[in-house]
Length: 219
Ligand SMILES: Cc1cc2nc3c(=O)[nH]c(=O)nc-3n(C[C@H](O)[C@H](O)[C@H](O)COP(=O)(O)O)c2cc1C
Image (cartoon, rainbow, N blue to C red):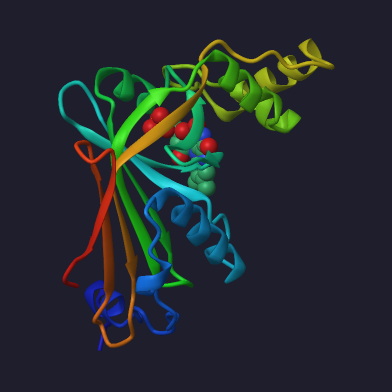
């Protein structure tokens, strides 16, 4: 019998080999942000590639959502940071509507984190410091970003070579290169369990109390 796409998708294993260690009550910190960093590093230790890659969902002025993957460059007690051009689609969306959602999924660890919050430009000095720490290839490539269609891949390669010759030493930071801070209002930690009784721990920022409140959620 011909195997349909439906059959093939439904036969793929899910949560076949997830971890059995879960966040325990005594591990639950007051602030979720350091725990996000801990989970990224723990996912890396399981062999997960790019454990600091997250999807970021933005919404444009008309309410149309879009998402893409980004690298997290830093996490402090208030925010997660990523860098991108301010005139990119996501940059224009954030200028129109700072509400964002971010998401990590680490299949090997059987974990995900969902974040909602607001994104804001973290300032010129921080953006330039981020740019200065990038490798030469990615600093040059940042200058390739521009709106509108690319006539062909050759045009991008030729432009890259022109930039390489133009900037033999220092590569200047493009004025649009921006380090953004995502300040979460909600962070949910989710862990798969082989018995399907998954673990969910949600933190919500509590403005009145000036900190975070957390609770468990039904699977
Ligand atoms: C693993 C991975 C990491 C990425 N990291 C970044 C990043 O840190 N910054 C960035 O601007 N784009 C990054 N990208 C490319 C983005 O996903 C996206 O294609 C690009 O930023 C254009 O997005 P936009 O048109 O929605 O603004 C990454 C893609 C992948 C797959």
